[in-house]
Image (cartoon, rainbow over all chains, first blue to last red; front, side):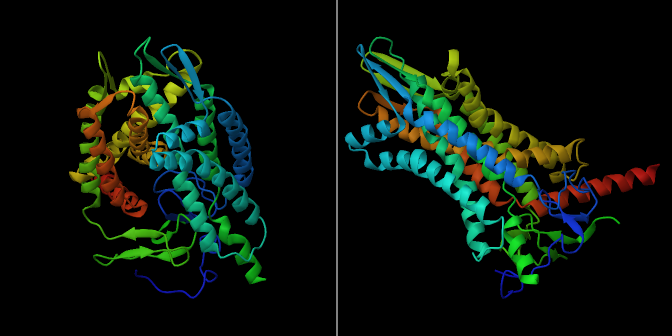
Length: 214
Length: 215
């Protein structure tokens, strides 16, 4: 690792402090009144003012879709006339019954732990940055980057349903059809991804900096 | 006042840095949040273009060749990724079918194509194509939505689920897809916003200067 080692997180000079606006797309710095980045043409905004509103809006819609995703079946399997419907958690239990504990663990993690953890983590971040906080900004950033990175992996279960439906079409012997939960779960994942993306990571530092300058 | 070339802001936390030439073999991290801002990689653009082209060709194999084959005594069923994606296409599930098609095929291909459009000419020392900046912005915006690697894990889970129902075997598309995932991961390690955008910016300035000379 190179670069000067600064003692804390509090002594950095930001583009906004310097009366400029930084481009989040290409890292170029423009005068504060510039609206479009000269280098890459992206829209410039010193701080995204509607960030938290959008975070909460997507968060709420994501949560609404997460409820039917858990209540309704994900997969409907028909084998020799017998039909069985599996919810997300039902599918995990089924896998565990077959002794596939590792795969059951992956699905449980991707479809239950990640989504629930994401709702909690995004809400926590959005609440904590609103006022001066004593939490280390780097901890918050790590949390945010982790949430942003892991969110997409929840899609595993939706893809599993797609693959099973495409492959298992033996007509009378066995067919697998998708349930309504597959759609609501996919939408829930997309909305929470949008929620995480709407968060302006620059705000993690803003309030503590203002507090420490006063 | 124009943008200052030697100033760079951290895209994550907005901290300002003065950046001159980056010493060979080093990388510049943000003083505040430690995000990697700039890397000395003169070959980065060429590597990105080569790897993106490789992935794009492999994607062609992925989409149309058989992906998985399922045998259950008398019955055999074969599915290409294209068929998998189309499996939801009936009735209320149609939107899901479109979404899966986007996540697994359309967006990964679009991302590769926009990257090649924006950076391809630079790797041959040619002038950038029109719309190169828009293409590069799109390539970046699409990044989180291209989910090829997640689909791979989905395949693994599906294999376990079907283990006692039938025997499964992997077709050429499966191995091709595995290669795409790997090649893309290598490509992303070469990518830093600062390097890519300053390379494109330099090329555009060269083009503009030449046009003014001839005018």
